[in-house]
Image (spheres, rainbow, N blue to C red):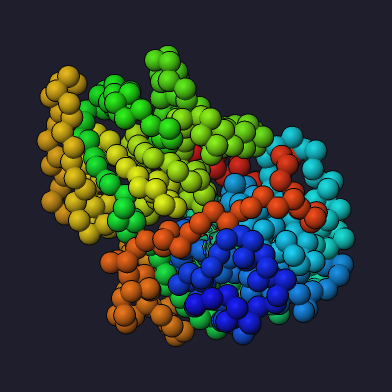
Length: 461
Ligand code: AMP
């Protein structure tokens, strides 16, 4: 389906073309008409499905006709500043030929932009993309104009709740006019998301387009090891593969720091990224990695979701992610766009049961690669036969009383089909780096109380 068929404004179609999008992705096909019609939506859709444009396009289109001055018109709440920046960039590209203004409002950084944000928020901005803590800091000061707000979007809602943002979200909503259109996007649909949806959404339509399995073109492997074998094995993998772009995930920032230091000692060109770094430092490292000037990046799960980096050739899970969805997100960082990718997971003895849970989510075991002899004997893979998996397939078996629109047995092709998981097929990097004529922020921001950064820190990532 082409974007023209949605009846979008010419100026927006130009931005879409300039962003390199030709056809709508499945989530866009389903969500855009509903949003245009004014429906509230709860959608399980992960990064890589084109979900950002799925909500941005109809919102921008509607704002072209109905935007009011002197107020925030649309508010997008997201868990991390990285995601806020990414959405703002996406918006900037898509809305380039329209008069829509936007600003990203997020904590962290050096404090120099608070007043710019304040100015924009008190003057009104068409679309505001924010992390919860920072937005509350502004709202509490009383100058944010929300009287004409028409649209509220919660993106990666499950992630926000995991990071402890429930109260912050409800607080923000208490500042908004009650009559508005609400959209909620979440990779997974646990009960707490259903509860949140019941509180916020009004007779929502439900859409399920989740990548419950990683793209088939990612070659997955796992090394079953003793914990002390992990560091020598990483070094060996990096040396033997000698790739231009490898992303290594650790669950805790402590492990990120330790591994990075070890690799540095062995003269690898490597940097780290986690919540202890200043926003400007994080952006710098990301930029270096994105442009392949930096071949190896060690990161916490702060990077596993929502971040769009092309051409990562290998992902190494230095430890088994805590959550099956995190596994899919982490390995989904490779094999984006046209490239193939490999993803290796290191499984220590005490992580075997956790990994079995992930294999259950995937629906098939991951190939175990033999640990090279020079590292000595490795353990057997013998997890409990069936771990009690707490990982649920998004949308599975948890109907949301009414409004279950898609995702039944149906055609099994587009809607949360475990068979067809490659939502990345559609993706191209659409960011053409338009210069901005919007008052949209990308610079480091001062930290707001309870900002995303603070919560990430609390979560040890
Ligand atoms: P998202 O799931 O929103 O993070 O989008 C993933 C990637 O797909 C981003 O780089 C988008 O710019 C890109 N994208 C979104 N929609 C389309 C489309 N219709 N055609 C091609 N690429 C797209």
